[in-house]
Amino acid sequence: MHSEKPTCKRILLKLSGEALMGDDHFGINRSTIVRMVDEIAEVTALGVELAVVIGGGNIFRGVAGGSVGMDRATADYMGMLATVMNALALADTMNKAGLVARVMSAISIEQVVEPYVRPKALQYLEEGKVVIFAAGTGNPFFTTDTAAALRAAEIGAEIVLKATKVDGVYTADPKKDATATRYSKITFNEAMTRNLGIMDATAFALCRDQKLPIKVFSIIKHGALKRVILGEDEGTLVYV
Image 1 (tube, rainbow, N blue to C red):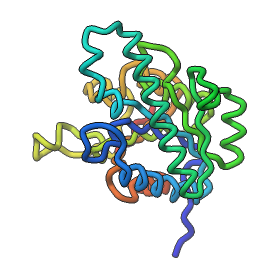
Image 2 (cartoon, rainbow, N blue to C red):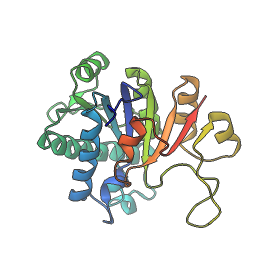
Image 3 (tube, rainbow, N blue to C red):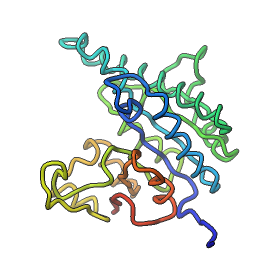
């Protein structure tokens, strides 16, 4: 048995809120969040320092109807609060599984979670704790993808792992086109030329400018996260 050697020391994992729903229509599916934490625990066991940015779509979906016609900034603040709920659920599940997790929020709700302070986040990572960044960037009009790119750059992550429901980036929609093939790797410029929509434009540009590679992989596929960390041919690497 060869010793398993991770290809990176510090990573930022971007989870969508939708990923927590499992097969439910909204909310947090208990077995799904437990399984995700098991996958994360496998990676931290290799000595990898891990930070997480989580979306809020699963909770926001439940109130989206009421946000129609609402001021965009207000709706975005609601979305940020949804990410705080997800972060708390994720941290609690991690702590019960024997990981030590800390939630840091970009908006101030100090009775619930501590504020995001970069030196503190770096300290936690060095101590082997999992840091969950909640409330996006703290600003409306920015997505949690942009928050992931921003936090990854701030903490000096070597790669952004974008967890999705598809096991990578394809030449076409694999559900609609049987001939669609997965890119093993693709440059930022190629991805932009082909308009592959991997992340929103702001997040994508930030990663490209910081020379921060993105790996798109499936969080549903068992063991995929660990295979990504071990440098196996899993998902799609977007690089400069």
